[in-house]
Length: 111
Image 1: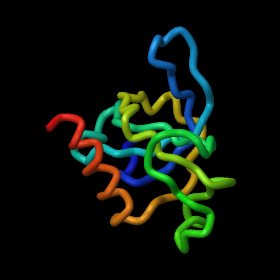
Image 2: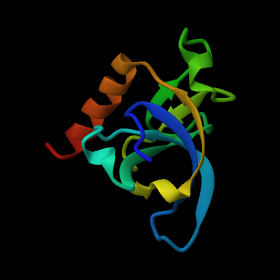
Image 3: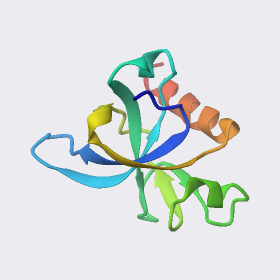
């Protein structure tokens, strides 16, 4: 099942050692052309306020549309390829302008 960029999903996100994982919200960051198969690129979303990344405050006007429960941080430096089989449910969506900011930060990793 292809997912749109900017979609927030709940999935089993593997740790970098692939020995274990954790159910957590993730953000789809890859384009629809890439997402047409079983795999897609995503980054984890953390509820830890001290985590490095792009902050999403519950005070943002779009926060309710994300369906996140509290202030969160998009960990854009933790890009992973995820199989759609690991997705347990769909949550909300972030606005295109916010997604673009996050994607620009990811692109900066490769510059």
